Image 1 (spheres, rainbow, N blue to C red):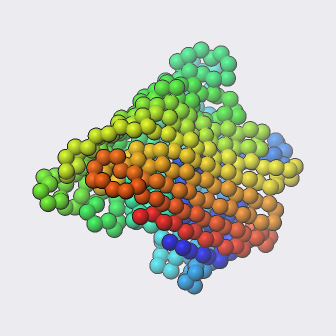
Image 2 (cartoon, one colour):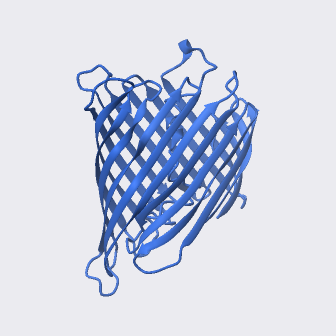
Image 3 (tube, rainbow, N blue to C red):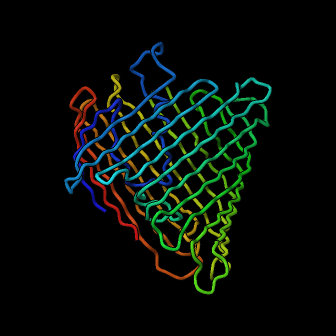
Amino acid sequence: MHRVALIVCAAAATAHADDRIDLVHAPEVRLLEPVFPLDRHISHARRTKTGTTGSLALGLDHHGEATGVATLGLGQYTENVIAAMRSELAGGADGLVRGRHRALVELRSDWDDELVGALAVKAGIDHGLARGLAAPRLGVGPHSDGNAAADGMVRIGSDKGDFHWVAIARADAGATRWLDAPGLDRATRKAISLGTGQTSFDGELPRGSVDLLRGRVEHTRIQRPFAPAGAGSLDTIVRAVELGIGMHDFTLHIDHELLAVIAVDLGWTWLEANTAGGTLRDNAFRMRLGAGIEWIDGRAGWPRRTIGFGLGRTPTHTPDGQRLVSEWRIEGEQRIETEHFVLGTRGGITWLTPIAGASAKTLLGYGVQLDAALKLGHGIEAGVYSATTYQP
């Protein structure tokens, strides 16, 4: 897929081109931009706890057809509440093409309360054409995918120092509906995690935890509209058991100059799938090293820089659940914004290898997106972007 568009942007903040490359391991730091603004050039007295970002991009693609992208971000932060929302819609001459929506609400007690803890609820919905380098369980075709997670922590150790020992419990669920995939209908997922680790109630470390021991079990049911010849069931069941350590949404907001989200996961995964051809079992090493960082240079708040990075190995399954696969992936994002222009890149490379099921060769996928915009003044920008992906 290759697409080039001329865009004119009317923006409350810097507009972003349609994100056509999916970054699986790099955290979504943009969701938190309205909550933790980078604004050291504004006095402390004028800093607000409520933020809004948004943009509207209109232009032409390389076929000469109209295209557009709209984004909206909202956020609010207090000592005890974090709330954020970000939505992105992309359309063209044929109507709505794709959308991505994320929301987060987190409640935290004061550090000196009798019961110190936190509860976070996070949800996300993707719909329409798949982004390049989407997760293997989703495939490359159009789909609707929704996920929700609840994350709870309660202090179990002493309150000495900046970090506190906490007991951790997480529950998540999701569903995928394929819109144009012969032999596939929908998949439902549910999982629960238990662990222990440390977290901070410091204002510069506003959310996240260091998980020193974590266990997780996941159950996925994949439904198909018809069964292969000789198969007695339409459903495929995939079970996963995980053990590991790492960092979960570990967030830093330092002096209103730097915002970073760090995600680390090191461990082992055991997979089992009840398929049409029998039961598949295997286990493999699992790894995720991801970071999303934004910061500003200069006394006037410019330039503003963004770096995202992800490296990981994920034992998972194909969309139909008939193969267990392992995906190695390296991905990244860079962006620089000055008073006059914006330049950005985004991309990645994946290697997908079957580990159980029908034999096949390793599949290579790659994608890259480039965008550039010139600021014309009064929140208006003009620019171009190009996105190319290959995913068999």
